Length: 219
Image 1 (cartoon, rainbow, N blue to C red):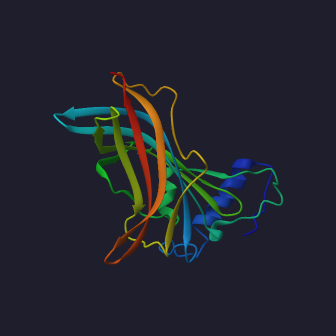
Image 2 (cartoon, rainbow, N blue to C red):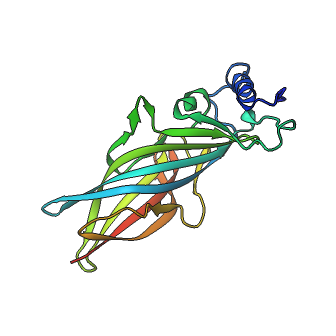
């Protein structure tokens, strides 16, 4: 894809957006490669715990980052070699392919939405897509009485694509981190144990990511 660039960055981005979203015959219902890898990372903005008797729950407000390659979105920047990425709001995700992630251990999940979804889509020249969303997830926690800890498992997988179609991967050595401002009066934020597993079902195997959010009691 070759863009006739001008010195005006906004004009360049308008041309680029039109070429990607209007003058493009790609099928957004089809994944970009036979097995598409989705790299995931999470930033926890806030966490609150509640308990009724022995039933513990955590409401986690987080930023979910997804990244994948879609060669069909690649574009030429030879006339603007310093251009880094095309910035778009989260509504743009409806115009390109994306996977159908679910939080399979969630009791409840909500996207943050005021006027438009809170998030963004960045498209890099090589076709790499970075997609960020803010989400609130309520999950059930297990109380470990021996170690005075709560284990709050967050599990992510594709809803309808098997592992030979969609492969989920944690992005980096510390893919799940906390904002420095996260504070719980009764608990101390502990380590996050991450794991990549494959869930076997009657209709196929599903690539799955597991993050165990560990909260240590202060009492």
